[in-house]
Image (cartoon, rainbow, N blue to C red):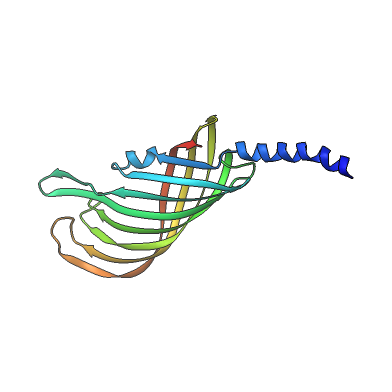
Length: 186
């Protein structure tokens, strides 16, 4: 019995060593958000299991774009979220599906027409994607998310005039995020 225990210890240590070398933390920057009107963003994910990661992230855009003196558009936002992802093979590699619980303070309008809407939105986001492994510390993460929830809003006739045209609470379903992210793995 003592001999069997002594022979099993190296095997157990080898398994522990394998777990210690597995990536646990990843931080990422979504390049597609920067292309969309310069939205700053950051995300951190932590591997809690071979197939699961949890994370948190934020997006911020406070820019108003003026074309002429009387024409402007904006997609300003502060977005905060908690997310979880399931990876069929192992974390930070290959296909994934995920979800987020998300809060957003927004002010958008003037791009497709003169109307503007601002408000607070809370909802759930679902998405899927694929992480391309570049080397042991870098991935390129592709994905699409859509989200739905409730928003409390105020709408205006134009981005700069301040004339209210409506307000209230409504449900929504919208595209949320296109991901082309650089993911640094530690």
